[in-house]
Image (cartoon, rainbow, N blue to C red; front, top):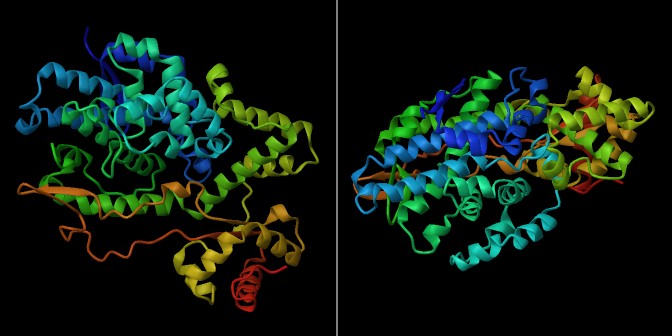
Length: 462
């Protein structure tokens, strides 16, 4: 049967084996991702940011498949493995790439905080995941360190995809291991190519980042990234001792990749209005949880009912309608009408210009004491507490980490970007906190906070 083709706006045609479509893509749990936005409320800032976890997952699959198939053409990669063995490795990687985000709750990272990580780990233990990882010889416990959406993703794989994956000849436990960054076959002493497959999905140069950086830049229209994705894909190489790396083919584009990762974060995720839009939606979820006396998102409801962004937004609409005098109703009206407050500064240049203090120390002070400072500043300004926000990025765990560790292979040696001297002395922008207040009091709020900071030597005012 010919491959199924799907047209993706980022990568062009994505080809899938019909068996993958039947057993993974067309399953209800995967289709739910069509209704989970990749960037939550960022569409209120970038109108085109309506892309979802569904197309992102297809993009990660497409890139993972392309990288692995390119590696299969390299003599060093295939010379000690049969074609059948490589087929098995590739099929596990393809399934893991498709399913790596299947556990994202409604509103992505905003809904993730309502998931019970301890309960999810207990359920995974019942399914034998931790035991399988330990029996394979992994010293660390990746389940203990996994994000909530990864834990839920593993639970969904083990509860809703075991028969489908068995039909494909793929071990569901190994798919979960790949989602967490490991290959059970490799850890058990299998072919080194198993370990490389896991790195394609989970490493400093994984295709997950490669897709969402490219996709977020294109779909938002931010256009802060000029990057040759095909060149990058063609540059992947691998070695039994060194693992996955980029060859010197990447030299022409690696600088753009380094800069682009930062730029997309700074001007999309960390854009001051994007931060507020997502903070506002997060506060709405908190108000809904308090009003209903239950979390708006649970793992059981995702598994049993397939709840998504639409489900939760409808619950917010009904709660606002039925509680007109509540904070939730006021916040919901702000969200629906996109009535945003003013920010005391929009970027690092304005921050440095308006705050007469050491910026790193001032930032630490703001973030560490945000709740109490919000209340104190609201009182000083004579406005309700929920009219003042002190916030940073809504996904701080996605802040770009040090990029020096990206591996570059040349001349039989693999070194990091920093080790080859390619990283340079770049002084990348770092995220800053924002202070949001009602229109017209931005300067007063900035002056007041600065005075409090100096007067209290970094202590929070009473």
